[in-house]
Image (tube, rainbow, N blue to C red; front, side, top):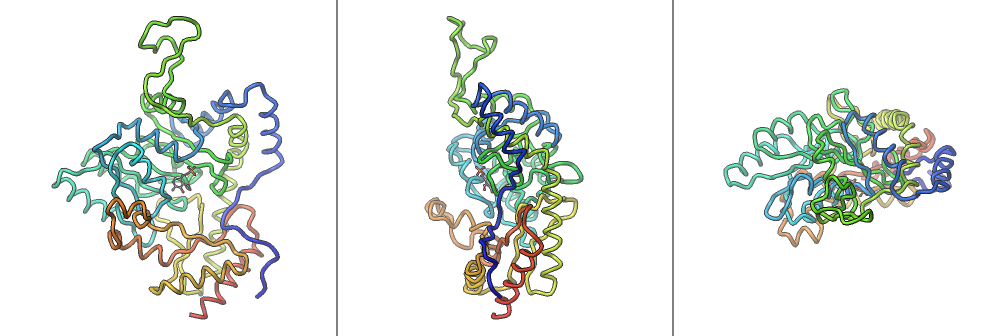
Length: 392
Ligand SMILES: Cc1ncc(COP(=O)(O)O)c(C=O)c1O
């Protein structure tokens, strides 16, 4: 089988003429850094997902960071997340001086295992080492079992930030991810491979006014401009006060214009992604591989299509990767377990700390999936896979 005469990436943005016109019109407006379009973007997303408040920022990494600070994470505290995620889900704890630990995954869904979480919490309670925050990661766009995690948060007194970087437009129990019914904050990413994009960008939703105001403040240097909130008496019309240590995590109007435009197609993007996923399912039916399972009660936004080899040999995983790449097919691994990166090994994590995550990463391959992927391309991708799976 020959290659199609082009590279097929594992994911990519879908930009329409209307998106381009909207960005050009923002570029011609008087204000091009954070302004009214950012506010419009925030209120449109919040309305869509059913949260009371939302803060648009320049990345999901920034959103995770300010969410952790707003929830009071500091030195001496502990944060737990999933080892199968992008490093940003864990790094946010370290930015705050807190300690990081992980909860192993469920091998079928790739999501944080509720059983492992229960076990780890009961041991941590005995040792007085309970986490202050847990970040469940909605890997590939499938929500974690939030109702169970929420129940545990009441029993063990921790707060929840959903890392829904992959999951805007997805649903849990028939309601949009991001409504924060079971969490304090929910974070989305608008990186180009994600469901909708602003080039780079992120968002934090919440139903708590105080957390919202803190995140708004942290997004822009910790500066307050409203005189009625000043700690000192205003000494002139130029006055503003820095009341805490914040950052420049602002989104520009150009990005917000793109985001507002993309948001109109959110549901369509997710429908298309689900159609592509179902087609893959049929095409691979007779092959010795499985797609990552989507749990009951979840409508996934299908950010990624992850197949798993039923294989224990690492060399075969590498072989399939290299063969797919040699046919111009952009495969990826989502993810290498976070605790195995050199930086995290230096924090004393070891091999075999999270065996399900490690086995998963030796067998997982993300194959291309994005709204503009064609049926012909899907058939080609599966035919190449099939060919090399037979060479085991
Ligand atoms: C699960 C997860 N969390 C966080 C991030 C960070 O997102 P961003 O690139 O918007 O900072 C990503 C990005 O890939 C991600 O996949």
